[in-house]
Amino acid sequence: MFELLTDHHFPDHLKDKYPLIRFSPSSDDIIISNLASHTQITAPEINWYLANSQANEEIKLANLHRLYQNKLNIFDHAPFKEYTTQVQNDLLLLGTQSPIVQDFFNQATTEGFSPTLINPQEITHIKGEIGSFIAILQNGEELAFSQAVLFVQDENLCKFLGILSIQDYYSAQEVLEILKSRLGTYTYKTTTLYTPSLCQYHQRRPDKNGEGFCHKCVNVCPSFGVTKNDTLMELSFSQIDCMGCGGCIATCPTGALDFAPYTIDCLIESLRFYQDTQILLIPENYLSLLDEIQIPQHLSPLIIPREKFPSEAHLLAITQESGHSFIFFSPVISRPTKEAIKLVNDIYQAIFQTDAAYVAHDTATLQTLWDKPQKLIHYTYTPSPKEARRKHFAERLIYMIKEGDFGRVESGESGEMIRYGEIQIDEDKCTLCNSCVGACNVDSLIANSKNFSLQYNPSLCTTCGYCIPSCPENAISLHLNGIKLSPQYFTYTTMAQDSLFSCIECGNAFATSKSIQKIKTLMTPLFANDPIKLRTLECCADCKAKLMFER
Image 1 (cartoon, helix red, strand yellow):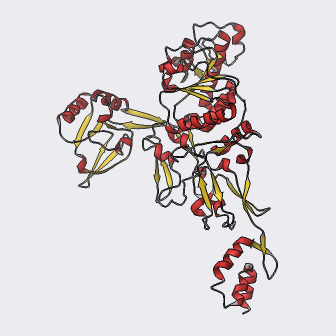
Image 2 (cartoon, helix red, strand yellow):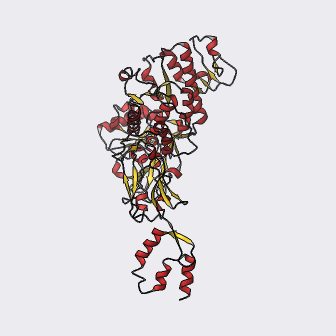
Image 3 (tube, rainbow, N blue to C red):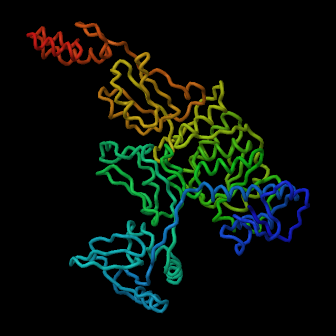
């Protein structure tokens, strides 16, 4: 049940359309209310929209219902857990004795902290997390502390939640206020969901530099929310150190990472209520910036928890499920999301000669975009559980392309964030050993046992490049040439094909012709003076053993 307590009057015939909404205090089980005192789950966006919408009562109530349903989907489907840890007032100051440090020391003491000043040169390393850090000293002793302030530059230590660099803030008081806000019981939630089987880094061979073939999530993470171990080839996630920005979600090519506060499934469930609407997408943390902005009647706000997690699949889902282009208001957008917006817009420009997403970083720009959204193709698609992101994106994209041919859209030449392309295989070199098939964990490369062929679907390929060193024949090359907007790009095509080779003794097929030819080329010089051994090169395992024993 939803509760809407307001002085705004809605006619009874409109109220009857939304039986889940209670317009007066109720003894029924209320899940979400617009007032914090009435339920555990509050939707502040309800009061914001009531105060700022220019819509008539019918449209306004329809949009309020959408906002409630979006909040309910987060409540029902967001699989995050809540954790707590205790943060005491012990504070470590890393620096040398100076008037600035001494002044901060005195202020911290006045504010109730127990500060300890130590020279960074006395410390070998720091481990732990907020509330339970440990500094290992040069003399072997351990110093425990809950939070720290740096008066020296250290890019790594700043990645810990609970360790602040004084140079990142305007005043000592600002730093102290942040430190005080974390004292006592500190609560945090799961922000990142991880599916190792889809990951292009997890337990795979390192590249020539000793790193993984894909670790974009680590590259974009501003904290220790996600780190990698190149010895084990495994990712580690620290939910307490995670800033919850979602940048890693947007750049993950496979969808191995998902945003726990607002999963892709949660988004799609919410979008079911936004069909045939023009969406104004707003991160919740920036909603207050729009307190003085009047929202036009034709726009339906959709509130998301943060701004940096949307990928190209999220953006295309918003456009297709609503059937319109949309406006995205956010002062900050992550580099992966920015690339995703450009990619989706390039696709819509190529097919429909219009943009899908209009971005406003400030309120002045926002108000120039009110009339930009327009009606576009509508398509409803539900991805299967744990479906790879490229599969989801491809299914949506092929619906737009159908049988047309709209050229190529470029992306990912830098290879840093979002990149698309395709591999090429030299069929003369390929022996169909299928090593590349085993290396591909997104089913872009498959072996067709019916016609002994190697097949490839470029729309599923993440261009990780893992298949290239997996090929013993050096037959594979990778080209970051973007997405080809034609049906062929979304289907499996034959890259190499062969016939079965039959044992010259028993006649049973046991290998491909190319693989036998390769073995003969390699071994014939070694067996040139031994006709029996030469014959075994064209025999199955059973006949080979039989020939050798009959010598």
